Length: 487
Image 1 (cartoon, helix red, strand yellow):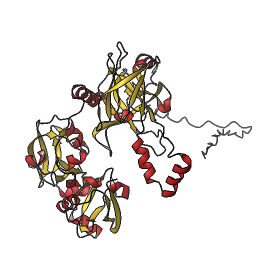
Image 2 (tube, one colour):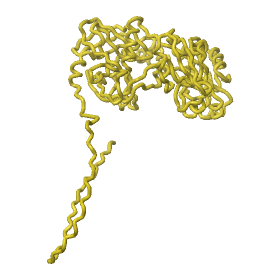
Image 3 (cartoon, helix red, strand yellow):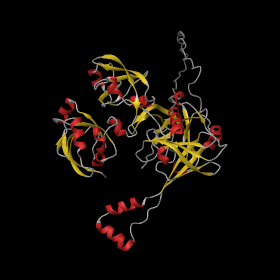
Image 4 (cartoon, helix red, strand yellow):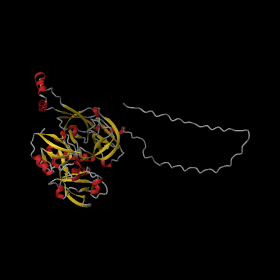
């Protein structure tokens, strides 16, 4: 229930002082010296904010280059059979005898947005708008519908490049996200909930935002109203230039709550060029697992304040190992970029072309040390990237986990003798079983996990399918969970 609060009116009370006069004339008091007039503050010569912008001309000019994207994904008969097998025996028998089998499932349909970047038919949108689609249709504002071909997609940046057969199409003006300033007005055009050509506006709330699910995108945060269907649509500045691609929201309700995130256009155009040339994107790879530096860690490593990316693990055979990086190094500069947070490092490394030699600075043993590294190419499988490009078992990939060795302090707090710390939970058996970041994996399949090497050996010998027990310590409390493999 929304409560309305009424403010009480402010009553102005005039006080009238009446003098009681007699018949006698009284002598006037001596004249007091006049007080000096108070000094008045000088008005500002120029206000910092003057009125609100008018977006009408921008929408009329740039709107025709914004498109709606609809997709169809055909259901596979094997999916239906698999769902049938997972039903209890009673329901399977019911569908077979009385229903003629499982109800036939309809094709999956979805809607999103995009925009035309070249007059010969290249269209940019989000990867999640068109992922796994069997049919992609681009609908223009003049109501033309064109079949689109997927040129290439990049899951890491959530971008996809489409091509339609047409010419003389309206195109957007491409701007630079580097020139954006926090507080600047921006405008989005898209199709939220299927409502074509909807326009919303707001300001840039922050730049370079890191999200837990995206390691390689320095998002533009705005308060522009973005809802399902806006994904893939353009974010304009007041000059009518596209500076970002609306991609994600953070919401407890599934709708807009004032936190919207856009992919920077400078990064997007680099992805576009690679997708045009090869159909895929190559990124730089260092081969380290890093963590955030808090106040206590900063003090222990001789830093004046929390900053940098603390190296928790160096992957065997990686560029970082070849360069001499060690666990405990704090990377504070990479290729001329200051590393303020651990999330800054993957974004910087990812933009560097593989086989490029770059300089970096680390804090080691209380002092700065300069190193040089030849950046490698990020493996297509993120789990292989964490495992040095080798077997998934090196980081418990079949479990859907990224882990690191536990420090003595962490083991002492958890009252555990040994184990490894869960750094990230990905899609897989561990997530399904409820494993969380920060948990300590103490044993797996009834074998103690002493360190990363023992975990690699245990995972290597796990069955492809089946259920295995795992002992997890969370906040000092240990409990067994069941991990279902091969599902």
